[in-house]
Length: 350
Ligand code: 5GP
Image (cartoon, rainbow, N blue to C red):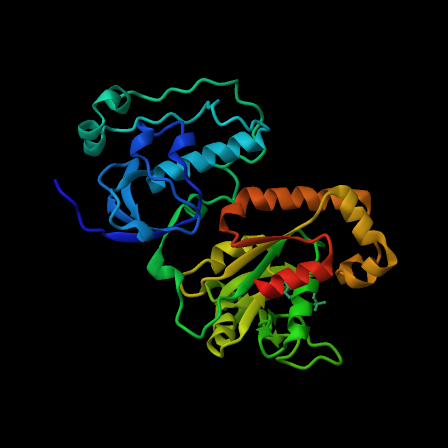
């Protein structure tokens, strides 16, 4: 059929090696790539195996890569296995692929044709308790699995910074990191003023700490989808509007946010294109060491002034694992926050 024109350019959000892929019908026909590579998709005719070229190797022959659908299923399967404490990729109980024969494979690799039509069957141990039930977990959304992203969506206008979103377990220190960034360069790093329905307190200035609104107005705006995140605390609504993020972005500053991880869904729009960083806690021992010294107490989050209990450290680590499980594929970067000053330097250099 000759060489077809590239229809779609995508950026890969994962590393791929046909060598180690147990599902590819023919390893020699595969195209290896790394996370971040831009690929030209030559054919999407097959449901499971697309044909692509790397942008940097446009004269090379096209190779097979897993389709978005196949990769999504693989990720769901692997995460489920991981959550079950089973890291072996070869034992699979729930996913079996039937890759249809590809014209490229059958014509070029006659000794492999027997593979292309066969069902890849997998046998494994009985299903153990699933820690995160993907079908029932509200945090989980199939569309949230990052596989390939169309390149046109990725690059915003020139001179405009992507918002930086710091995600992390409560108490890990992302609010302190946010404060430090804004203190370092208040013109460059800015945080949108949140909305609230609570009454203004003495010493507060409307529009500085919060934008104060009525519950009626805020509920209507939430219903209209104007908030990228919102929550209720002690009977009052709080939230950040998408408009206030855009306003900061449009003035050329870096908008910096540290919302609950569930806000990732609302933030991941082609308009906002946030740069999402997971602030991770170190090991239990390191956490204890770094968060209980007198110096650490004064520098880590204000929530920490009373000190953390062992249970709270364990909770923080578990929470970070859950966040990684649910949203790991969206993180543009991860910072291990064992030392605030060091983490801050890493963040500034991002
Ligand atoms: P305060 O009323 O004392 O200023 O804030 C109380 C709590 O409101 C904060 O600790 C925080 O949990 C919550 N809060 C403040 N701003 C926001 C926001 O923009 N969104 C959400 N979801 N909660 C907020």
